[in-house]
Image 1: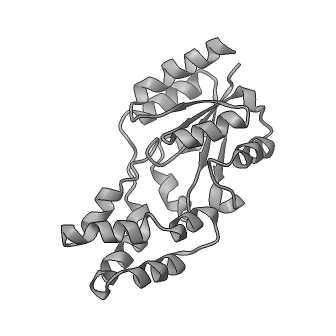
Image 2: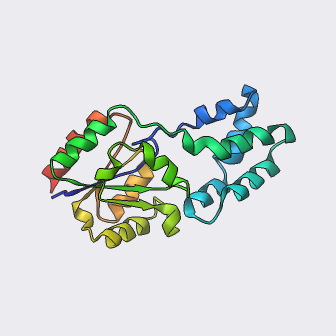
Image 3: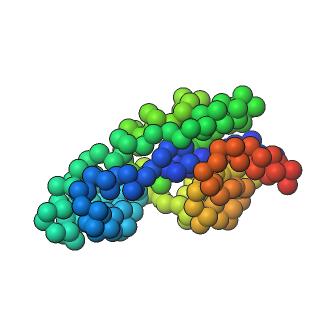
Length: 201
């Protein structure tokens, strides 16, 4: 029986939108360069892993970018995490789940700026736990992050339902013994998927 609902954050609870951040780059033709140098970099992953800070990320990006794009890259690095609004409808789902007696958790690949982002998560004060990759030096989809999460909070993986927008991350949760769903942007799909998972127990 599922007792715990575990949410990813970006693209599930909050709108992590790379295209919106790239609007800080004046010329449209330059945006793919900045996307690749920042968001598609090993250093970006290292920030989520907790072994790279903003200064290291920016320095690495600037080494790959022409000089005229350095100011835009710096602005993005300094500000993107302040621009993550909640998705409409997510707050109501969280409220309903909590009112039905589920324990709620967050498990996210995210850098050290989580303290800023979390302020936009609806009803975050009603969550029972938050598990951040950069604090633990673990990353989804490695099943080890899910196992460590369950050990940390004393949870039975078979009683956990994990929600993430990335199929590989959901597969990692399944490998660790959880149930789960791939989220496609519709908050209304969460409760039916959870009911179906309960029926499979």
